[in-house]
Every structure is written in C-alpha cells, then in structure tokens.
Image (cartoon, rainbow, N blue to C red):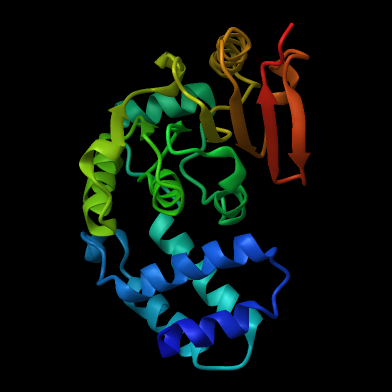
Length: 256
C-alpha cells in the first residue's frame, strides 16, 4: 500500500460511508491522483491542476471533510457544468426543457455496485462528456456503456476522456443523438439526470415512451434517476428500491 493510499484510507474511515462504497471512493481518488492533466484542459478543465493539487494537499492533512470536499470539487470540474451546444442542439434542448449538464454526484456511482454485472449493458441518457458512465465502467467493468448525448462536441471530448481514463474502445458506445429520438432496447441499467422536463410536450412524450419501453422489457432493468421525473410514468410492474430526494432507484418489470 502506497503512502497516499494509506493516508486516504485512514481519512475516509472517519466519514459516514458503508465499507463497500468507501472502497470504491478510495479507488476513484487514487485514479485521479495518478492520472496526468486531462486532454483539452485549457478549454474544458482550466482549473483541473489547481483543484487536483488542493485535493492532494488535503490528503496530507487531518480533516476528512475537507478532503471529501476537495475531491468532489475536482470531480465536478471534470464532469463539467454546461455542455457546448451548436445553435441547433441548443434549440432542441430548449424545446424539450433539457438541462445543460449538471453533475449527478458520486453517490449514484458508489451505490450502483449491486446492480451492475459483468454482462450488463448500461446507458446514460443525456451523458454530457460521459464521465458518469465511464466511472461506472471503471468501478464495475461490464459489457458495454452506451452514452447518449445531443452535443457532438461533448461526445468528442468524451472520447478523449475515455482514452485518458484507459477504458477500452469496445466498452463504450457513443451516440450523438437526442434522447427523445432514442430507442432503449437491450439496456439493463439506466442512469438519467432529468434529461428533459415533463412539463413540455416533448418531455412528456419522452417519459411516456421510455416507461412503455421499460414496461415491455423481457428482462430486469434497474433505473437510477436523479431529480426524478420518471416515477409518475412507470407502471406498477416497477418497484421503488430507494429514494432520498436526490437519487431515486427503480427495478422491474415484475413478472405478471
């Protein structure tokens, strides 16, 4: 065990994480501590080196909460908080009431372990630069991660991040596509952070179609929904696994 790993492990033990999640968080911290500056940093991640150094400095201290805060800041910067859209892409986002990229947080990633198997096909609906799906792929290697994102620029950046993270090319499928036009067949694990708002006509149509597709899926599907809008559209075939006001998890369809 390296000195850094030992220090991080000691500090994380004082935080309120279940043991399994604490171990996965440690893996993510060591990963970003070891990686060089990401590609396209001057344009996309201008403060990455600053935030990384602050995280490493906190790792040498005694305050576990400051360490956690510094790492979450680094993660959020890498996730990005607004996608770069062309005028056409932005217009389609506005029509559906879509978000312009928000970090979903590390908790969904750390809590996904029981629901992702080696043969799982996962999907992020409105993936941005794909960080969430790629971190799931790193922590729980599985057959394929499908990244669905309307911004072609973000997808190109995501492909660069994939190489930077060392994820094999055949483990991630990138789709430059509006989620409202996507089919969701053959997916076992879905992650979404309110890619469209149900208050719009296009948004309601998206959730209605997604719920219908899930309802007709012959095998089990697990959904991790941030700032959930899907619950009201799902049939009773789907059980609520968990909700805390931020993350809501469903599993179904139940056998009839």
